[in-house]
Amino acid sequence: MAGKTVTRLDLAEAVAREGSVSKQQSIKLLDDVLNAMMAALVEEGEIKISGFATWTVRSKKARVGRNPRTGEERPITARKVIGFRPSPQVKVRVASGNKA
Image (tube, rainbow, N blue to C red; front, side, top):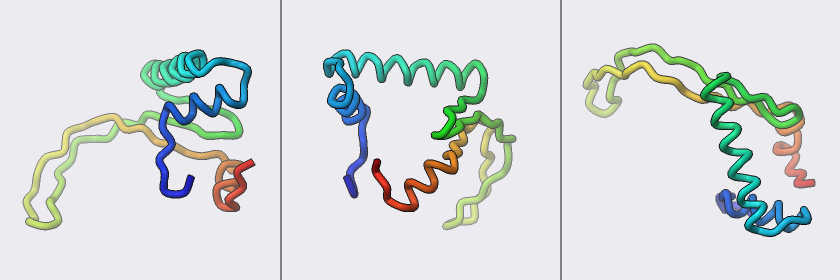
């Protein structure tokens, strides 16, 4: 899959292929999982899946930014951002190129 973006449909097809569910059921399952994850981020501010990753919501303060090309200063509003931190196991597998 080098150079290819993995989509929600690709993941659902992989679930259907590996599991004993239909493609429609795997799409519904994947959507349910993703919706539960989004709800947990909004409500709790953190999701931790052991052996995979941690997602956290952080608040960033308002600040003044600068356009690097023109040097023009502009205000950047306060906002919430999502951080992603892969587990050590994921880091090792990605670094080694081990798909299994």
